[in-house]
Length: 509
Image 1: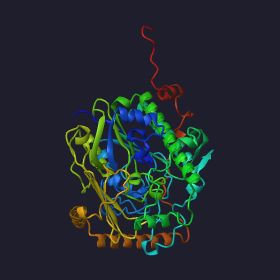
Image 2: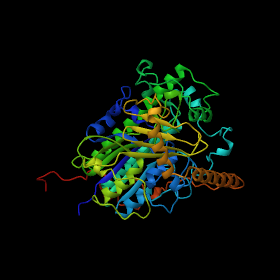
Image 3: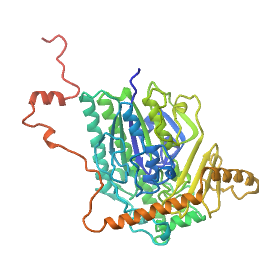
């Protein structure tokens, strides 16, 4: 049996595919991602399944939609009994490693990963549970427009601190793998928090752009549908309108943060080469969701519009998958079966639980593949489930009580023309509404979300009383086994730590 390849998954937070040169953007400067795209397979219509951090990562983890796992929002527990992609890879003989953000909520902070090198940037408890019953009351822990109003350069931020640790730990781990004796294939997920807001970035990156380099939003006309109005409320945009200058500064900081992420991609690729692992490693670039960045007068995510829902998906595997582009719609739910089949040398495992995703191997090998992405949004900014069907050139968005939205995303990529109300689209909308009814019991799903919120809000309030116990991951470190210690033979230690190992010159005795 051929040894399956390593997997190095480089993940950004809130990175819209539409903000990258390999997807047509003319502002970003991302030479390392550009090189991966030029030598890899670029998925032109990859979508997140739920445009919010934890629910999207829950779909990535389990290959299932939020309604099936209960990972509805940023404070919903990831169920330990459900097998995730790291479980399937570990069962197939992989060494599974996570560094950075995954937004695992609950006491299980591994979900199949054998090693976790850093803590998470976000909390693991139920403190960020939304409350659909109290929609008018904006939570003080959620997005506000301060990120946009205060956008600009800085010397240091919480997010820079985090991503520097993530990058260093990943590079160090690659060299530890190269120097060590563990010959198992590895899957390493390196998950950064940039370019997620707040829109502040180190001056080095801010100064890579000038104000004149930053275009305004393509479609800045404020959206006027009910969901857009709810989003404006929940992010505080109605209370703190932003100026054109603040919009430009936030967009400049966002593009600068993308360059920051790209530099870390470059450092990790350099470490992979230096560790002599690049020839046997498939590299992926992905993101959990996108960013509206002022488009349609909106910010952040929480929407199935293209800037928030379209994500980069780039797969570089020299000698395995020929470079090219895939036009069909796919989603993050498809990565679990893809990873599982790669680990099985093209064979699917006996899945221990149902999955909603479908393998991308037919796309990668140009032998066919599906053309469909299904989405659910069950968190802030709605008070009932919102769902999406993206297939062919159509995107259909449905939420009970809201007008339907139907877009031809090929002819109308900025989604300026909602076709759902046109007489000529009535039959198509009727068919899509019937498909929604077959796929979802919307009333029952809403009740399930409300019940989950009630439970978690109660538990979170109870746990704030008295002594607090934390679920946040505490990275294990044993300093007695690091660097030089007196119980370790010095010459052997230094020889083992050197990579590549020293070899005497040819011909020497």
